Amino acid sequence: SLWAAIPLCGIGLWYWKRDSQRKAQQDRHQLLLQFRDMVRSVAGAMEAGYSVENAFLESYEDMSMMYGRGSMICRELKLIQRGLAVSMTLEELLEDLGRRSRTEQIQEFASLFAIARKNGGSMRTVISSFAVMIQRQVDTKEEILTRTAGRRMEQNIMNIMPFGIMTYIGIS
Image (cartoon, rainbow, N blue to C red):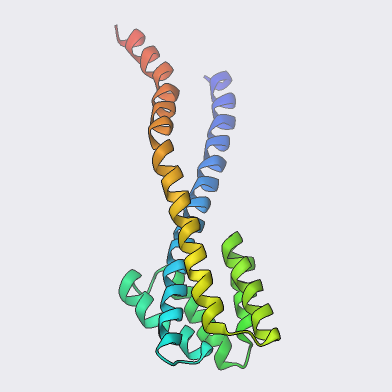
């Protein structure tokens, strides 16, 4: 029926928009997890004596082994690698990453990195402390998601139930 198709198209568009927003949020969360591991890798490379730029370049190999060369963080590290090759500053590249990712923690890292670089702070200490901080934030978020998973599942079931009842009534 045409009268039923019109509202269902609106519902379909609403669902598609909501689903794409949820997918984007999941991608940002996945990038944050990968970024956390990248920061830890950079901190480890700096502890081994690498300069900041070389530590970022070295972390590409670690991330490609962990997540594969097609992962989000490897693509971002490849962009950083190319930017460094054309004499862009690491601060600019990290700010660009934070802006494109629209992830608060990455933007904070870029700002913190730029401030520490301008003021001549110990980059090893800054990156190591940020790695610990981002680990705590991610762990807290994961715990919250784990604790609310049951309620989300119940809500999904309750959303499907009316259609299940209508189908049952229609079949019987």
